[in-house]
Length: 133
Picture 1 (cartoon, rainbow, N blue to C red):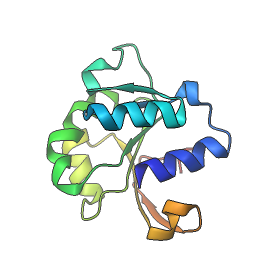
Picture 2 (cartoon, rainbow, N blue to C red):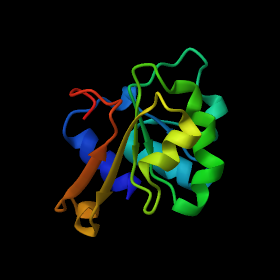
Picture 3 (spheres, one colour):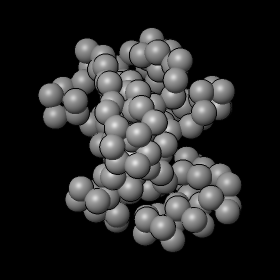
Picture 4 (cartoon, one colour):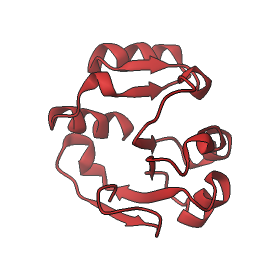
């Protein structure tokens, strides 16, 4: 689903040079880089300490979230909004990991979104502003 969303965002004008994908699996990383023309790094530690992302998307399996999300807490409270499409992970869950000041949006795209024909339901916490939503 993450690849489908990325493809749609790029088609709608997001600049590929503004995207960094964290993908630990080498074959998948190579495919994402070639297919979308975006930067791909194996871990969040490979993102520059000076980076100031405006959106961080969690598009991982829910069972991987405990291992994935904590590494991104360093971006909470700045201009970043965290967007998760992981089923079963609540805003409270993310606030517990990322901190009370984190701007968080939970979204649930449906399966047709994978081919650009779906809908998404989203819910934001009180820390998000209109532009982030």
